[in-house]
Image 1: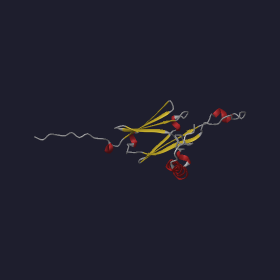
Image 2: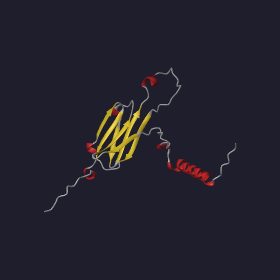
Image 3: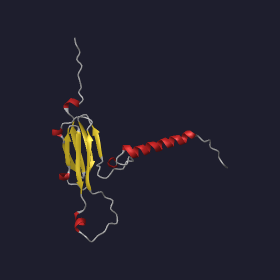
Image 4: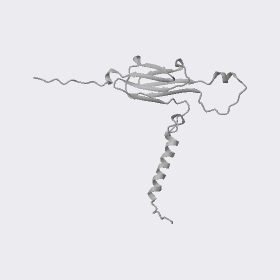
Length: 155
């Protein structure tokens, strides 16, 4: 049995609008260094988690295979920069009698520059490295911490 479906021109216009939005975004908004927009990460861009508590900002980044001394962290005002180098296997670099079957792991510099959402105390930042995960605890500046004010009763 054949079903007749009523044609609605607005259905196609919405899909055309979505296609134009995607074309505009891919052409002008997103650069190759900012990722594909589909959850994937561009080469060299360090994925992070950044969240806030009452006392500090917490940043987490996974850097498997990186030595803690190869991580460079700088804070300049409200700008945080984290850089590291993902190195290839030194044994492969020295051996000449092999050939690639797959070469999917990224090797090279990775980094991230972030504008922090609030002022922090750069001299009190703590950086820890455990099992390939970098954790930064960035204490908030005193002037941006929430304060509680007691209300007094007047007699």
